[in-house]
Length: 169
Image 1 (cartoon, one colour):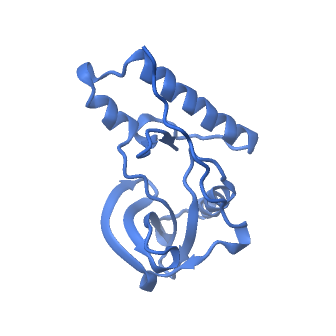
Image 2: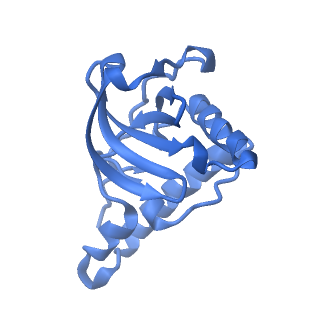
């Protein structure tokens, strides 16, 4: 039995860090909340700056960011701006107002790995699918390691499945 693996295509190269566009709410059309995390809310949006492309906008209230965590938000944006890999989202813009900070990345319309697992018979993946996703996770984590980055929140809920069947961290 052969496991068909969809071909990966190169994402468009990300702009250099100093060329990432600043976003403002006037140029964004917000459609719905995609999820809430400990650090903020993620919205499904379209942006005039990104030719109407669907994006995931992570928004964090500035007042909710502890002083020592402000650097972490900037670090997260900086890390995303350096990514050039098909298993990671591309950073399309950053947002900063008096009350919030945020950034827009590629929207991944697929489900997360945990939700997909629960939809399988007996809530488990086949051995072939497990090997495929494990291999992609290793590739993604190796990429991070080579960038000097440690992914500290790796769990099935944070692993998205792209429309082409590949993972997105």
